[in-house]
Length: 115
Image (cartoon, rainbow, N blue to C red):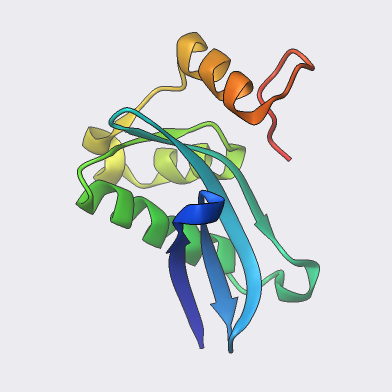
């Protein structure tokens, strides 16, 4: 059985399977926006649809909290394109948001980190 929790101290939603951490989707809050920048599922948990379950719950929680969703992470961005029910609650990843995210993550390579 899987569960999804918001670990606010780590700025990420985590999915656990039978009590074991299976993966996460990381975010940073930027005013009224929650900017999702990285999603990862452990190799031992791949192929079970956990990333879809994780992102669906994270985005629903973000929407229900009254925050806007910004998908910088390629998986989150693709999920948003496939799920129009989140369209009115999402914002594009603008150059300003990307620059802010880069600063937040301490990435000086020239692009936002999407580990």
